[in-house]
Image 1 (cartoon, rainbow, N blue to C red):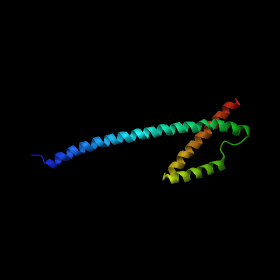
Image 2 (image 1 turned 120 degrees about the vertical axis):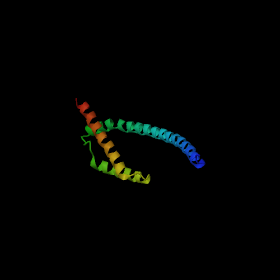
Image 3 (image 1 turned 180 degrees about the vertical axis):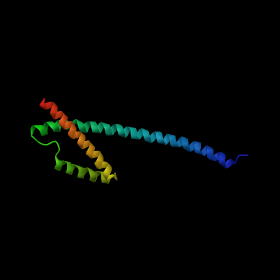
Image 4 (image 1 turned 45 degrees about the vertical axis):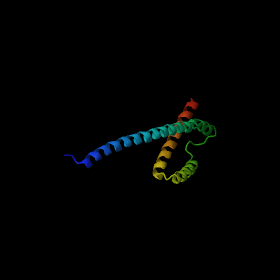
Length: 114
């Protein structure tokens, strides 16, 4: 004869799994929405790279401006620290965005020169 407690645990696990799946779906939908917002913000950010490239080209300025990069990175790391974000992760993300922005600037200027 099955133990009544074991049967109840099985039902409880099924209910818990259903609740888990509902919560997981809800959280994943929220993350999906945030990811779309992040991508939209990246698109906006990269919109300005060609405009900056034109100015740098016109005024004979280098694409990579070390002082600006250092200042910007320090400021962003202070902000990210307030949000308790991992500093290495944030630095890695910002560095990648910066590198891609410079690539986009160079690409844009190469088109202007033609």
